[in-house]
Image 1 (cartoon, rainbow, N blue to C red):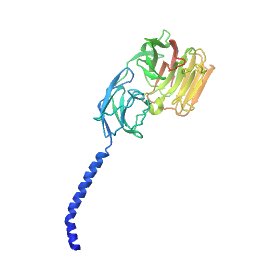
Image 2: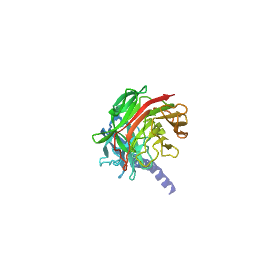
Image 3: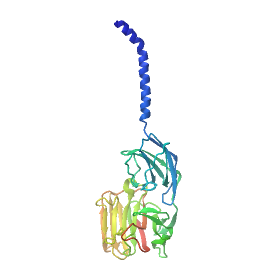
Length: 364
């Protein structure tokens, strides 16, 4: 009896093995299809261009493997990564045919995120978005064609070539309109920057140095700023639009009460992020000409403001502060001078304003 069973088993064994292998293969294929990782594809990519509210385009694509309830979020990189098309409308539905589409402001790169329900996108990101948490997957693509920068107006001041911004930017909680006519030099070589109302809207001024200077001492001599309204801001900063990993290498000297009329201080030195304890030093700048300096070296940023048009020995010191933590290293940062408006419900800007910068100096 045992011999007969063994013979029968030996006859069936090859067939059983074949069925087992076939079942494993089919089962494996079915399992692979069910667990395939979601993937985002682009069908229309906007051009590579500096962003601004003036221009929008369409970005679209498809997604495979998405589950019900998941949506798409788009970021465009122009300096920081900006959520698209607007912070209050960041979630893009996936259609029944697995496609998606939205308008977007322009950028040099674009990121598409597949996200779970409950995801709340940040308005801006310093670094490229990554997979994790409620972000299922991310696909990043460069804009089409050679990068196009927004037009600027050339300006020569204090022996350096500068670029005057002509497009809007979200700064200080306001979409500030920048006008190339709002910055110019006079016969003495001084730089004038103004805020002026045109067609019922405030237009501001923004000039950027044409090259990076790196470590060294930066000096800016500014005429009286004590007349500025609370909602006006004048600043000298270093800024690197590609330096998100080091908070854009931003080091700031700023004159403003940030919309608060009751604030007795009207100026500050800061490094970024400014909200980190120890990264902000407020002070009161008096009337009259002031000389502001920043000495930037490895691991140290030393700020100083004195009265008068030079840093001569014995000049009355208004404020000085040294930062030694979180100091960025040089990259492709450039000096920017900005005169703009911040949001203020209680004390919104009422009048045109102007500041005069006597000179800019750099000492390596």
